[in-house]
Image (cartoon, rainbow, N blue to C red):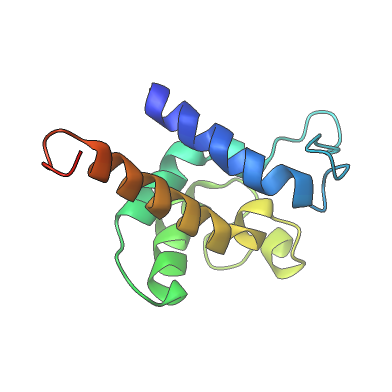
Length: 118
């Protein structure tokens, strides 16, 4: 879906230049054959974010564990060595991901002719 691609592009524009797995210019330096967890699970991540509305990160993290971590081959859902060692970009940058998805969703709703706010 084009909307998801736009969200992914905006998110990477915000995150990649700051990511510790990058070169500071937005280029990924993950080893060949290793995919960024954010890219790999992006549709499920957006679904997890949209399933919650809270001022606390805890419900968002619970949704992430249920909808994404449970499907990750590197995690058994409850335990994840990559998460424990802060090696999972998805977990590391999840607050920024939540903020970005919610901000873009709000912008889209405000611009929609159906809302009457456009």
